[in-house]
Amino acid sequence: MIVKDLVTRLPYWENLLQSEREYVSENTSIRTYEKGALLHGRGEVCMGMIYILAGSVRVHMISDEGREITLFHLNEGDSCILSASCVMSQITFETQMVATEATVILVVNAGAYSSLMEKNLHVRCFTYELASERFSTVVKVMQQILFKGMDSRLASFLLEYSAKAGKNEISLTQEEVAREINSAREVVTRVMKLFSQDNLVEIKRGRITIKNRSGLEEIAGK
Image (cartoon, rainbow, N blue to C red; front, top):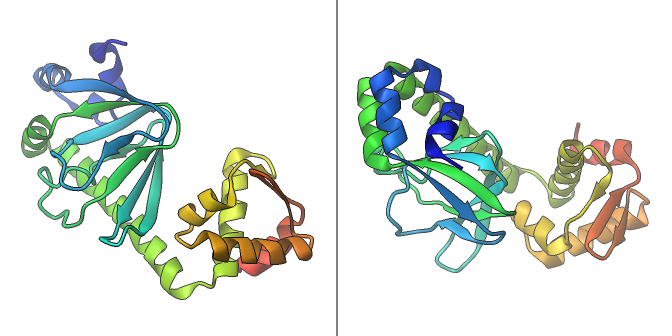
């Protein structure tokens, strides 16, 4: 893979001057990660702006006690600057990023991206819109944790995950589900057992199959 052939995928590429395109190409790198690899963690050097070429990344926060809160996922075609507090001083909390499958990303280094923001209005607008979108997602996650019951959160997750996958079968362990909805595995297991008893889902090792979508939708409040 050659950087100059891939930077054209950046969302703001068409709004760059030729000199800016050359500058971005010179300051962009390609990074590859295996499933489970840490892309960015607390206290690490600012990455800058990242763009997902392939794969998927889970973005989460982790407390001093080790509890994780999943904020959102990045998939092919997504961008993120939450790891770039040195680019945007308004970013005041740190996140960690882990590849959930083999992943390839473009990284525009922090200094170059900061300079680009100052000079190009389109890039600056894109950055603030992206930050606003990500923070809105974070607020939604916090609202779910604070105000929605576990049965509703679990039902919503199963419905949304299966809808994205395009099938009723979900290839996740209950521990992975717990991490996604920011709960303990024991709690997810208990609620999932109730769902199974009500014939809403079928549970097998490493796999959950939705049997009654309308029933889950009622619990989720949809």
